[in-house]
Length: 213
Image 1 (tube, rainbow, N blue to C red):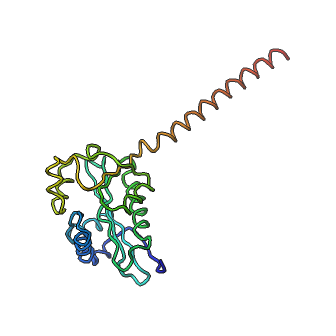
Image 2: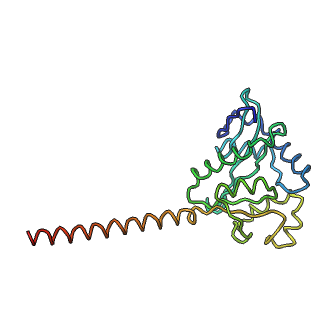
Image 3: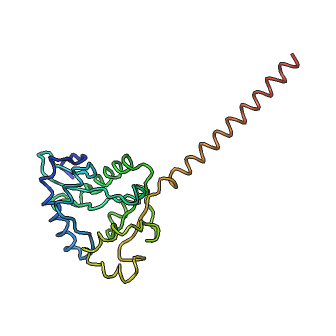
């Protein structure tokens, strides 16, 4: 990729790109023949104004890519949705950069939330995997009806319905911060135990040394 991009948290000044982003999302889904929930320009503008979206811009300020955050269950579940890159800038690594930025924003806004995603794209699966997501069954995702309603505009919605929302063509992936932080906590706990043990030994040695001398 020869061009340099700025990937930043979107705000009011970026709402001018909402129409283009919405149109590109729909066009991309049709080209692939697979599902991506359609999002209106109004919805995209809302996410930008809430500070729950990132936008990639070229050096001259043109739109290059986009992704946004959705949350359910009072912030217990979060998804990074609507990842889209302008056709001229695809296959150059920009999607990965956007994904990393929106992941960072999600973790800052919802540090204890489980991050999940549904995708049919192998490239997105690879990016998610690199970020620490793991494949899961649909039962581990949010049961909030408002999330699943978002799939109605997907070409595979009838399949999802026929499977009673237990399966579809998309792969479900989940990042659980509690699970990711568990090994680190266990490591610190072990170190703490070793430190306490050394302190106990040191105290006993000091006591014995004092008595003898």
